[in-house]
Image (cartoon, rainbow, N blue to C red; front, side, top):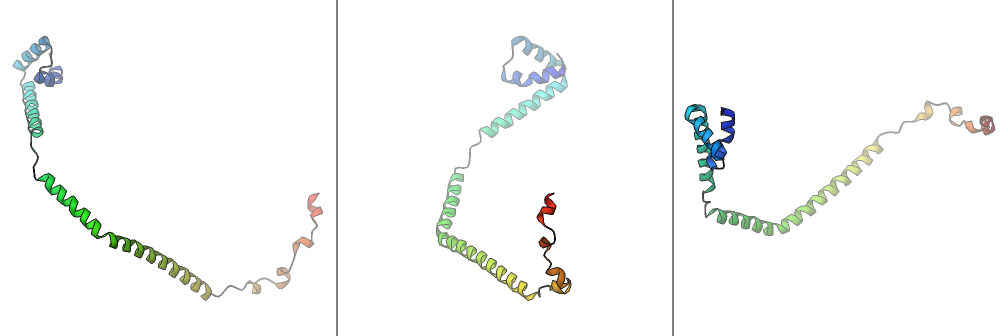
Length: 142
């Protein structure tokens, strides 16, 4: 047996889920290979740490502390119910006021600007010219 196949089977070897002949081959290989023994020892350490973590008991006061924090949050939510409603109304009023102020400012600034008088740039004859009487529509139909 080579080191790769031995390392692949080490976890099954530790749990005892191997056939007898494969188990004997792994034991023979472990007797001569120091690297695989180190891998086996490392795997044993990892499994012991995991099992210790699984068996740890939680702090009995943890749930009490969590519940007290939840109750405090719920109490502040109940106390701030009126202030939350007032805050929403105040926010809506501020948005409305801002929009109204922007509209008024836009109208005021628009009326302060003097409109451009294009009549000085275009001759009066051209401004009153009506092109529809110059050419008849029958001319374009042909």
